[in-house]
Length: 196
Ligand code: GRF
Image 1 (cartoon, rainbow, N blue to C red):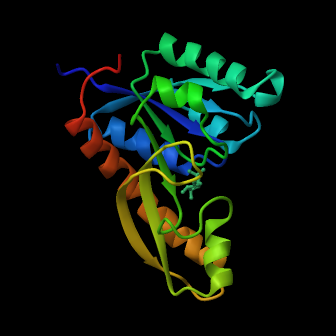
Image 2: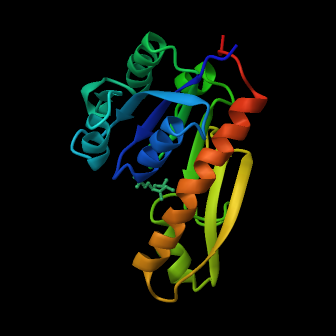
């Protein structure tokens, strides 16, 4: 019963959230083990970060597959090899399709740099600044078929640094690196056990 939850992190970008989760696992703040890092972008910096660890890194490009279903079936095969129980999206820039959603019901989590339902999709921080909002934030939510639409698990508000996307992004990332590990820890504690 003391087995750690097995997490796959999906990422397409710099991987700072992956790194924060990996630190949390190592330091015992998150009762989990990241057993796989999957990226759809082989050149992304997350690959370099992950290669500094012992974690298996897989780069699978959707364009190498005839369909999204075939892509996700290939992913599923790898997830099953590693007995993955939870998928944490961390800057993964693709919609999850029916194949993975059916295999991991309520077991796929995403972090998004806005107070959802505001500013879904790409460049949420740029959207917030363009709209002139004074407060934006971070949301952790379960993933469904929509874009950033699933049930919300946690939110933290972050003030916008007026006109400065860079500083606002830095403030958001500081919060992300705390809220993601905390939310995953709560989720894992209340929903233990291996998916069937
Ligand atoms: C984060 O801001 C996350 O909220 C969004 O993509 C960004 C990923 O950053 N979904 P990183 O690659 O983890 O540094």
